[in-house]
Length: 155
Image 1 (cartoon, rainbow, N blue to C red):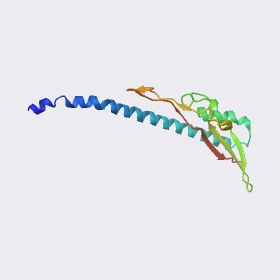
Image 2: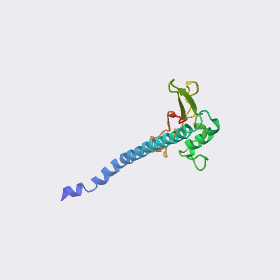
Image 3: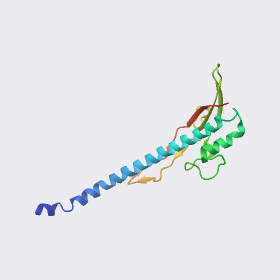
Image 4: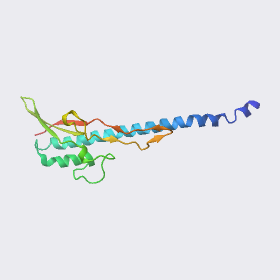
């Protein structure tokens, strides 16, 4: 009977010691999952923009605005909010058309979020966490490397 009395508050003390660690692990997992989700959203939007341009006449610059809207807003008109928080049309580099091969000649188009002019990475997307600090642990923003998709043009 005396042993039960001595152990009475032990579970509460253990919970108080372990709960902050469990919550911290939950927040870390949540932020990491959000970052992966954002990256996948950006990769899909760049793929949609490249797919759109691959059906257009190679080098047709009049279609670039539509492709950028697809990459940022998910629709050709550019209506609504961006697919990722803080994503702007300025993050989408100018699409690049290339002709590769000799027999047959293949036209390709490359669309990317983030630019690498002269080897210097610029205009990349930066993921911002929901919480800047939890239990003294600071979550910093994460800068994604340029997300690039190249597709063969249908024409």
